[in-house]
Image (tube, rainbow over all chains, first blue to last red; front, side, top):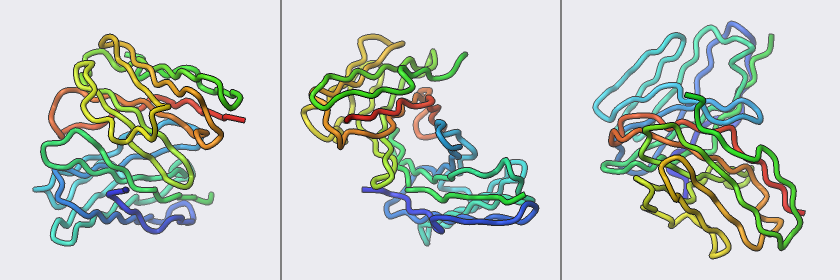
Length: 111
Length: 115
């Protein structure tokens, strides 16, 4: 079964706007990661946030983690057409190397 | 490093045929994962290896699926006999040996179509 569940399933925005995607999970985690997948390609790691962290930034990306609510959000600021892709959250449990992925959010950025 | 290399990129085969997917992980990565991606079920972990040893194969759907890692630089996922419902994109990924603290590096995937 899937650990992470992203919402929305699809998001369409204009270039320059911010995009926010959410992820909820069910069990305790060691860390949570976000990945991007361009159509027909493999997944690319974006950012990792540990369970004892609440917020992390990387360029135009901002990730938050609320372990009490078992949820995370990914914010992409000043979106570009090149950000069009599917975004997945993945969780790693304590003492585990396994990553469990959600079904992803499909983001479309309209030029 | 060239990253995780998978072959073939595309495979079309007839039902009942044997299919072998191949993966070369990033050098120095002790962990290797096989995932399957479909529209209906998303990304599913099939099996993963640590230092060439299978650790968890609970995601392997049926006995028709088998995976091996004969050495640190090569792994195969075999389906015998293949069925149309096996059609999916199969990804291989590898990770360095830092428990839970680092990302997985994915290959470009093999798109399998069973007709």
